[in-house]
Length: 150
Image (tube, rainbow, N blue to C red; front, side, top):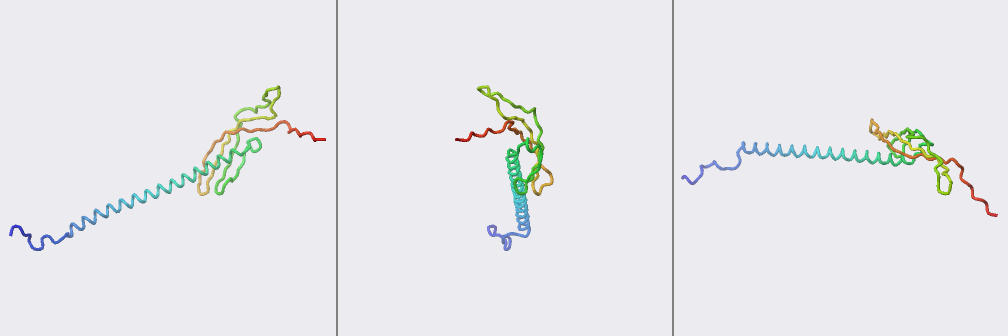
């Protein structure tokens, strides 16, 4: 009876094989859950960075509307959850009376400013520094009124 197996020798998985298979599947499952958890954490961090980047771009665009001659320092909330405070520093002396063709001069004084701003986002403890270079313009002559028609 060399060609026939003993009775009961090949009846399926034994207890040892089943435990080894369970251990292999458990290790693979734990690795999968760890990978999913890491991916979710990275996606959440990316969404947070994207929101911060959008807020900084909003603050930078809003700072372009600030007139540093009229408001050399201040604080504002240009969007919900966004706070901007700034201090303007002149980068040079005021420049005025620029000659124009025909012997005329400009009726403006122009100064280059650097706005040092602190941008605070709702839910963050630390503020983000932001620097913007901006031109301040002030009219030195009143606007001429058109002559009345007779």
